[in-house]
Length: 127
Figure 1: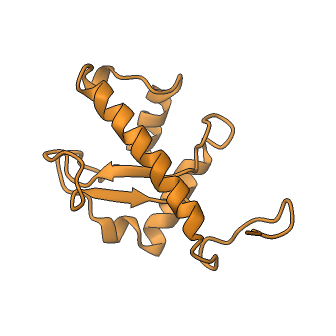
Figure 2 (figure 1 turned 90 degrees about the vertical axis):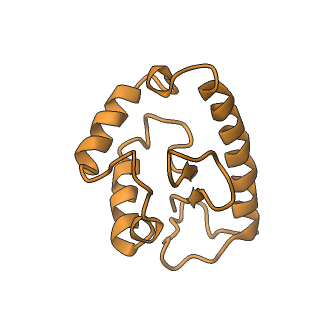
């Protein structure tokens, strides 16, 4: 599979749906999810540190997304709208040189009251 010439950038709005890339993402995301869930069963989320800059990321998140309420269900349509994607992309790009796999993607529980499940999980691809 060719993604274009070396050094070429991909336009997320015009790119193809790269099925193999999505499968690779899904496998890695599930592995991470399982690991994080195991950690959360032993450590309070507020005590868990995944990077050296967790506090910086949290403060940046709160500034960028002041309307976010962690007790509420995430509006997936709003998050994945053109405006939502742009806001997330700008947030994520601040960590390009600071966090490995900063743009790989993630799995989110749509509601903190429920564990991960087919209807409670959002796949977020940062393209």
